[in-house]
Image (cartoon, rainbow, N blue to C red; front, side, top):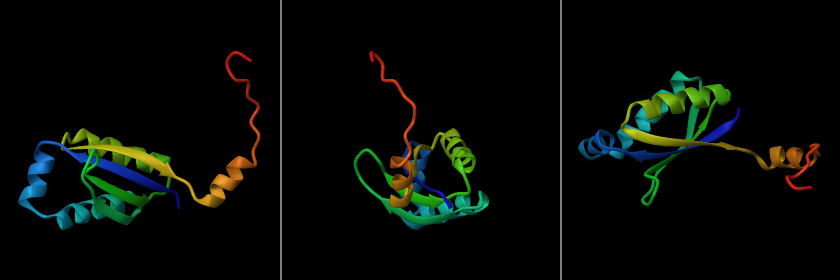
Length: 106
């Protein structure tokens, strides 16, 4: 199943809830959201810097990832960016393909 990395920043009420409750409540919320989309949270970490949390999730497809991202961002309590993750084998397969392409100016 494809894997995705969600990079989230807590905004306003999202940060206030994190302070009122604990980090484990955010993990539980992420797991519940993932399960509702037919997916599974593989890893969840808090960080400091530009990103407050990283979630690695297995999702059925890009549509499920987009649906989850749109819904999360629509709350206004989190700003989430999603990155599609690839295995080394998938990258190997990609590097074996030769697209027909002309670079600009050539």
